[in-house]
Length: 224
Image (cartoon, rainbow, N blue to C red; front, side, top):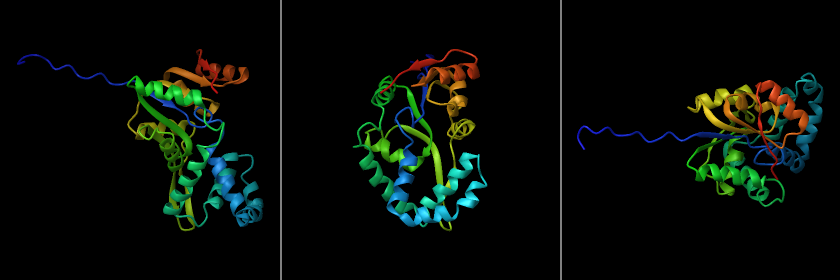
């Protein structure tokens, strides 16, 4: 009707989920990398030969981990990586106990409520994307670590962890969120920016440290 104002549709609330430790019970990319080494013993030998150089990164564990990832992906292009990831994901979804059933149910409930659900994780994007698809969650938005082609194979381009999650979310066009589910101190930045921070399966010591860092109580859930 002329002169009548059109009411804008409400903006859905944004809900963030970490992946490992929230939707799974283990470090998924680490499992993938371990399998790469188990299937190609020459990668283990190469890592052993490179150990003196790797130890120069000690105790900076993230610096130590990256060369091990690069050795695991040595000689692997994007197409071959995608095939390996899809094969791994198809087997992992059938593995009992890897995924957190309560976490998956919570994610589906937020979806059913019409909220904007985003998985924000340090795990690698293609791997998480494949796993979510296998779980029937292919429509969930994903902000994750990224690989890039290099002269000797794929390399880590972006590691979405800690404050890096905030940067990646900003680049994704998500400046704010209502609720966030995390499981470790690596998620502090994400939790602190949430109106409703939720700590998943945190022991009393971790809960205390998170609440001290946030300066307020945090909701706690025990998921299986």
